[in-house]
Image (cartoon, one colour):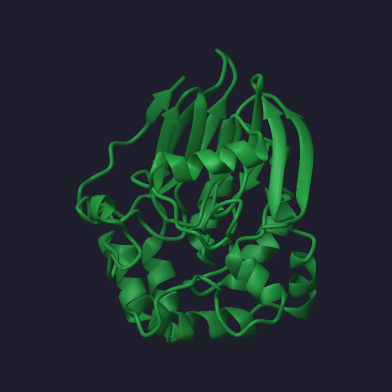
Length: 279
């Protein structure tokens, strides 16, 4: 797709990558506290999109991101909201459970984001580029060619390879699919931090982000944390948002696996190993 690319230059020190806050203010607040505890400045924090979504506090999440002063790209939800569209743009199959539920949470999100914030979302670039630890890094949401494309660990490398070729990147940081993973081949790194707004379908309430390091060349680690998911779930119920998604916050299991390939569907409920680091 043709889109705006923001070059943020050279980054050094620890970099925190996250995505999919999904209007979950309790998770976003906890992540900000983690960044502060690690001493990671806002200029070294990158959001891969979909700050707005399933949960109950879309405006509050946007307010916090603006106050925090971090780098953000527009996910499909931000693109749809800023353009005044009537659906989330996730390309769910019509009448699927995801499609039906999106007709509940998307209108709620749209109506609870201020006009000022909708205008501000036009300032979010579609992509971000930066250099880090001797590598060219490109940040996208789904894929370079389609913001709403779901790319998973099991997605064929040939699909990912076209993104590297087009962006001329050594490292691609992606979002959208909801699951943390990495796929490294031929010195090319496809890294997905996962999301903080919903658990990773592994039967735990943890949510996921990623830390990049440059102390010994290029390094990355998948990290998880717990937060006040009870409050987040209760706020969803109070605002008549999908009860199945509120339940996901407390069970760690998705309502369905409609978007998942066979490999990832088979991993439902299997605990993801925490804090894996790679050079």
